[in-house]
Amino acid sequence: MDDSLKKKTGIALFWSFLDKGGQQVIQILILYIMVRLVNSDEFGAIAILSIFTVIANLLQDAGFSSALIRKKEVSQSEYSSVFYFNISASIFIYFIFFFCAPILSEIYKNDSLTALSRFIFLAFVFNAFGAIQYVHLVRSMDFKKNTIINVIASIISGIVAISMALQGIGAWSLAVQIVLQMFIRIILLWFVIRWLPSLKFSGSHLRAMAPYSIKLTATAILNQICDNIYSNIIGKYSLGQAGFYSQGKKFNTISQSIITEGIKSAAFPMLTKVNDDRARQKRAFQKVVSITAFISFPASMLLIVLSGTIVDIVLSDKWVAAVPFLQVVAVGSIFYPLRALISPLLQAVGKPGLIFKLDLAHNLLILLSIPLSIHWGIMGLLWGLCIVNILFFTVEMSIACKQINYSMKEIFKDVVPYLLAAIISFLPTLFFQNWINTHLYALSAIQVIIGGSLYLLLIKISGSVIIKDFVSLLKHFLKK
Picture 1 (tube, rainbow, N blue to C red):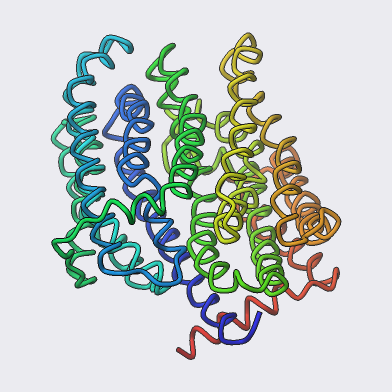
Picture 2: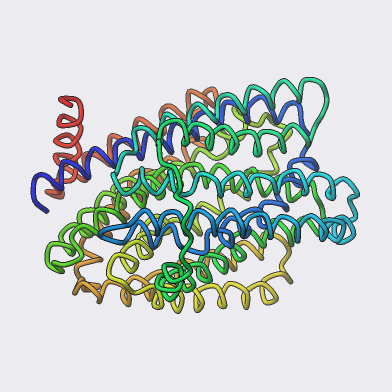
């Protein structure tokens, strides 16, 4: 990776991490207050609606945004055509969901879901109006502006939601937070990115991008169905249990999304810029894999070790039932940040069809595991998901990385040292509660300090240059 690209990627990664991290910190602070004002059933009701909003977002965009990001040059006509498609599709989908909303109330035996869903679904309509502005930010790798926009939207929507919850409005305060955050984000995107569509729509542009975008969309929809179906299955038994699961999963998602989305957002445009040079692309991808492994493994281990403390601090002791959900989900998603890199890699090399095939196989295994593991209850269901995720990771990574001649031997060399170091450093601290008699928060501080220090020491002893790379990138950013 040449110096200019390395520096630009480092800056992009910094702001992308800050974006995801800033949003999640804000969300945790808001959640800290909201869980004390809204009950688990109301959180569960919102959780089971998320799958429909996510799928609607994917359908209204149809993968065209990713196709635009991937192109070397994009014309005004192409931007405008995708813009008009997104808006038309989002309105059409909204009306379908609007009239089908009563079905959700019947399925989950909850009359409030009809009005709640109709309101929450407005979020994906708003999202369609800012898709092209976001494409401009990603293509220019200007994640600083995106960070500022998202943080402002999160703060304002969170304050409004808390104010409503204090008035006893419950689930509607959560719904307003979702919709208002999206609305504010779109307003700010239009203010920052002064792009306006032309009055030209060309179906030929969409047809040219369709082979790539359709496969990408189908893959993303299948992924989201399998990722969110567990909340809906659990919600069928109990909205309260769905609420506990959703909060346990949320903490795992927070840590993983800071890492995964932050790296993915910068990795895709970076890999695209060097997609005419496979050797250079391989070196760039190896660097991204090493950085991801270095950060994600200790983060996952910390989440497992500190799950009880995290739930106690943020959610309060009335949410203690969420702890085992959090721990099992964290184990099952330990390789998720690395797996998430497969998609931007295959998009960059122009293999969306392979993304679809790999995700189809993975998701079919997940769906097949559900009837087999549900006999052992909700926890059995989640452990079944863990096993599928861990076993299939090596298969996906091996197949995908062949595209850039990145062998499994090289992958293991770049990944396994960080995994072993994280396990050796943090797993023993899980048993400190049996050996050290002190306050829960003091114990957690000891676990973090000892585990973190040992992890960094092991990485240093192993001869890895990853810490040096991080310091170098940070110094370069601070000079800017």
